[in-house]
Length: 343
Image 1 (cartoon, rainbow, N blue to C red):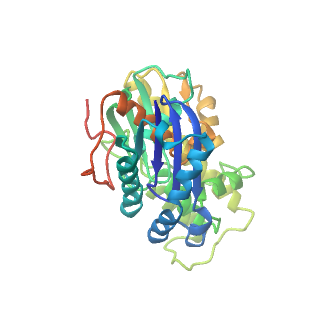
Image 2: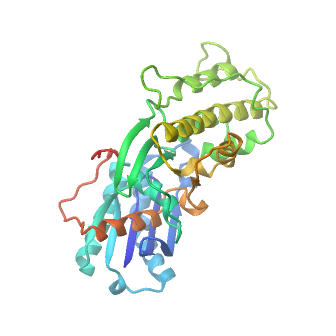
């Protein structure tokens, strides 16, 4: 089965064609990073305008890359949510139009579920179930127990910022370029992770939840002093920035890894499946090994860590296998928890 995937949940316009849920024939991603870099984050209206400009060329490029005619396709999968409402509408309405024009079914899929599926896409790679699912990205930080593809049990989530968002905000404090994750990681490589005694947040009564607001505040006080104003000057030297970056990164990532390993054990999981852009951080992966993680680890390939349409098409294949399809009444959802239908 050949499925065309469309992804427009935030600031990437993407289209991919995947055979049987795993073989990627085309994976085209138009990135808007340079467009949003001056703002230090995604400017929603600009993102939507750019989606409108490039979505048809991106779809055409995917078909050309795969050397396929639309008549060869058996289905279309599109991100329904979560995401920016305007961006989601552009992708979803494009999928509906193509479904009518090409006379093939379409299905809306959950973007964050697709991030987990990305780690399962390579042929002959299948984690044992149940597995601990961990998504860490710019918009999401949560853990679920994966009973099977499409079947999840909620474990924990962030109470405030997603970890990727925390990286972006700390990068802004240090005057580092957007996106913050790669900037912090690069600076931290030459820093001392023990130079600043930052501590992860502990949430009373919610041992599997995350919180990064207190950690961000600790960074702010460390670099600007107590009760700083937004325009307050830094009280650290340029050389100390790398120590702040390393200490922040180590604290945030250690908290996530430690909870993931403990949760996998507590919920009797057989493996840990990771998804989302922050999984591309090499220090994150190294910490698992340093902690002698006893669970098999599954990560997406580098090109599937960030938002992409291959994971959407791959997951959509499983919807079609289960005889699922949507009609023109389908609407986007800015929030659509992975654990909406708990087992």
